[in-house]
Length: 544
Picture 1 (cartoon, rainbow, N blue to C red):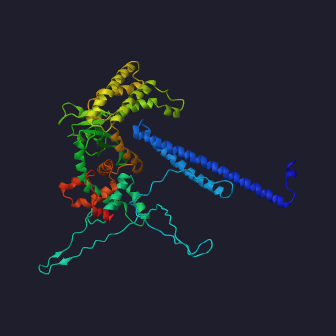
Picture 2: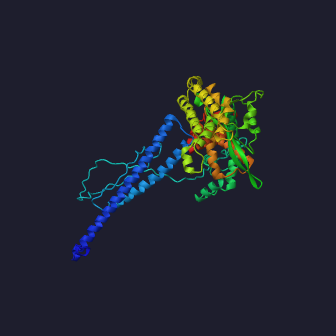
Picture 3: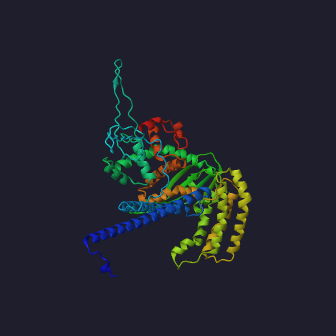
């Protein structure tokens, strides 16, 4: 039968056929949309489970590679896109299914939502009950119960002006006039409250938002705060907070062991920018069970001269964990006054040099013109990773216990690694890339083996690298420091904010409370405002 003969001859049958074909097409589109939604939901679920597995592995075993943190960030970004795609496809499938009676809508499986925090205020909205039954119209209604739906909402930032009234009184006997003192402001004849100042400081130094961007955002909210006004407040706050920086500096430099590192900080100069440096020293005794609170200490300089760490650590005589930067060498001299610093080198730096030569995934991305994977570098990475596995097991134990485990398990592995490296090095040309990585360790072997003789020493200098990570990310936002004094001011604020974070304290809340109380706090009691001693005042809580 031809196609023309299969068509209906009367109009009613043609209409019926068109409607049937239209319904079939809609049903097919709904099925296709449902299949796409199922596929998107499955991909999002798989990505979410992979991310959770990687996070659990990191919590249980620690970071297994240099790229683990970046890998987790990439997985989170990928999950973000997949979740958004799945949500769009689910809505499209629901819309398509609503046009048919045979295809059921698809509902994606989502992770169970945590209840909203108890401290959040609740606003109750009661929907008025009907006066009569919508079915029969009867007014005899009896309440069976109620359902409560919670919706999380945000109130846009509110600005307010606090008017402090200070009444004047005159004494009728001596005619003296008395009046309560004006509220404290950081700047003379100031106007900004502590919460506003803390927000500006944390946005600039904690979230890396330059003041010009903050000023533009405040203007859109109806509050005119010029760049010069904000800069005036920042300079005054930094001056007021310097005594706390001095206390943190004293605490850090009294440590038995420090992590040290530096990174570039462009500093504006005449017609150009100088490549300055930001130096960080981290005191963190938690890996060997120490009770002293952790803290970070930042300095800045115009160059990377060795004079700077020598000046920073002029009274320090403990263990310095750092890379092999030659500027530290004068600290290690036996005749140094008041005493030599003990060198402890970072195994992560050494491992990274081998890892670059043994990174199979990176070489695959680079193409066919790259040199082949080095089997020596690959073997070195495997051997070093065995030491990292042992360190994960003893992290947080007392120094004596850590040293005992290292003597039993790590020392034989280090001895075998040294013997193997010297054997392989004898076969290589001095120009071979892997020979340079081996020489980096063998020429400094005493510093790398320091952790076998002192349980306080960590295997890596990652604590200092973590402290610099935020600054390195912020450079993309603020580009350069406006002056050398500006860089020093930033170092003060980085010290305060970094120390608060290390002690699990909200930096903005801490800064707001400190700025409100520091004027009335005697010099002898300033230590009570340090992050590890800090307790928020009830006055500030009520004001907030």
